[in-house]
Image 1 (cartoon, rainbow, N blue to C red):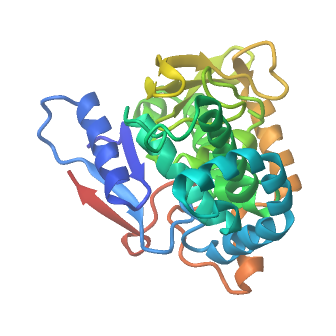
Image 2: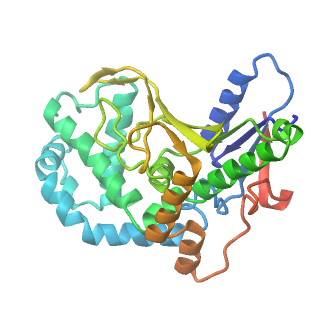
Image 3: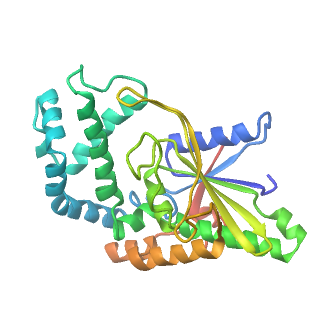
Length: 324
């Protein structure tokens, strides 16, 4: 309650409850209610642009991918889809890409739960591996992609993160009392699709986790941005934590903790904050910024923001909170 910790979640029950569980793990035995902030329905410009203010831009990008990427996808994964069609007793390839993705997600989630996902032993291991790659290909090309869809995936979080880091640096440089009153940890929890945009926004373009397709962000991944104040200026150490996964086709994959290297800091994990800020500016120049993308797509003024320009919580009418 002294501002040392801040908890924000995407508006969904499991995101809010997961955030609360994280908070309780940090503060065991503390009976003080914990505020978990989240945006109003359809107005989340921080963690869930695609289902709210940017829904028009997101739906348009999906429609464009259906036309532009579908032939490539069906050609690349035709053999695997034929095998899946035979197992399902229906032609999967005739379905829209979003429905194919939903079906493949079902197989992935079943496998991640430690259950068999080979449809009664009808799918060979190599077919299942190919379908796993197909699922990620759809994530990458349809739901993340590039340009407007990548900006929508990143949503407003990269801008907020950079603002929060710069504010912390400013507080540290002013005086000790300002440094002690600044937030020590801020947790944001949402769907993992957002991490694709967030990582790309700061130049983490080539992330590889063992046992997963190149560039895939596995379920439950947490990214930690750790600010260091050095004599040469502020620097950021970025780490990824991936929980253990149980896979029927790929075997057990142990938990992973690894440092991430950004563009411009390929040889070291600790990266000057100015380099990451420059990476973010290049990202915005190349792909756009979520708020401007939303405005262009809807041709309407953007809805109330979840966070102010300073990166602090807006007045009550722009946010809601859950006491847990």
